[in-house]
Amino acid sequence: METTAVIGAGLMGHGISYLLARAGHEVRVFDPSADALASLKTRHLAITELLGDDPALCARVFPTGDMGVAVDGAGFVIEAATENVPLKQQIFTELEALCGPDTILASNTSSIPLKDIGVNMTDTTRLVGSHFWNPPHLVPLVEVSQLARENLPAVQRTIAILAAAGRHPVHVKRDIPGFIGNRLQHAIKREAIALVADGICDAETIDDVVKMGFGKRMAVLGPMEQSDLVGLDLTRAIHEVLLSDLDTSGAPHPYLVDLVEAGKTGMNAGQGLRKWTQAEADAVRDRLRDFLAAEAKTS
Ligand SMILES: NC(=O)c1ccc[n+]([C@@H]2O[C@H](COP(=O)([O-])OP(=O)(O)OC[C@H]3O[C@@H](n4cnc5c(N)ncnc54)[C@H](O)[C@@H]3O)[C@@H](O)[C@H]2O)c1
Image: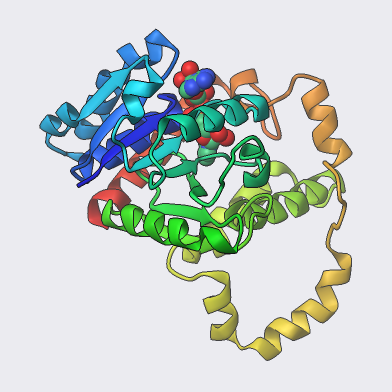
C-alpha cells in the first residue's frame, strides 16, 4: 500500500480520498478550508453507511491544513481543488517542489488541459489527468489522460493504482478537452437542446426518450457494441440520412445562453431546461444516489 495525498477536500476530494482509504492506502488530505477538513470525517462516515463499509477505514485518512505535511512521503497525489487555471498552476508548482521525483502528480480537472496546468513545472513527465465522475465513490470510471509520449509510465502506474482501488480506469491517449466521456455526453446535450429550441419536443420528452429508450440498455451495451450488434451497414445507412440534419453549432446554443442569462440555471434556481420544486429536485438526487449505491454494492 502507498502513502497517498488528495489536494482539496470538496465534493470530489472527499470521495476520492475515501476510495483510496478503502483500498488500504494511508491518505493525507490537504485543504485550505478548515470547514472542509473538519467535516471530512462526517462525510466519510456517511459513505461507509451508504455502502455498508467498515467505519474503521476512516482511520487511514489524515486531514491537514499543511500541503507539505500532506504530500510528505506520498507516492501518489491527486489534486481535486477548485476548477481555476491559476490556482491549479500554483498547486502543481508547489507539488513539484514538495514531492520526490517518482511521485505521480494527478489532476482531477474536468476541463483544463494538462499542458496549461503544468505550464510552470520544470518536468511534466509525472503529470497525468485522472478524471473521476461524480460521485467518485459510486461511479467506477476514471479517465486517465496522457500529456505526451514520455508520460506513458506515469499513466500506466496511475491506471494500476486506480484499478487496484476498485475503479475502472481507461487510457485517454491525448490531452484533449472533455476527454472521452464529456465529449460523448455533450454531443447528446447539444442535439437535445437544439431539438427543444426548434420546438420538436419539450425537455421532459428528451429525458423520457433517453431514460425509457436507449438509456435503458446503455449500462450494459455501449454504442460501439450496439453498432456491431445491429450491423455497421445499418449504422452507415442511418448516418447517410441523419448526420447532415444534426446540430453542428460550435458554440453554446442561444436557447441555453438565454436561460443562463435569465438566471434559470437549473434545480438550485427552481428552473432550468425544466421547472423544479425543492421536493422534486431532492427526489431526483435521492433517486440517483440510491441507484448508484445499489449498483456499487453489487459490482
Ligand atoms: N463536481 C463534479 O461533478 C466534478 C466531476 C469531475 C471532476 N471535477 C473536478 O474536480 C475538481 C474539484 O471539484 P469539486 O466539485 O470537488 O469542487 P468543490 O468546490 O466541491 O471543492 C473544491 C475544494 O478545493 C478547495 N481548495 C481551494 N483552494 C485550494 C488549494 N489551494 N489547495 C487545495 N484545495 C483548495 C476548496 O476549499 C474546496 O474544498 C475540479 O477540478 C472539478 O472540475 C468535478
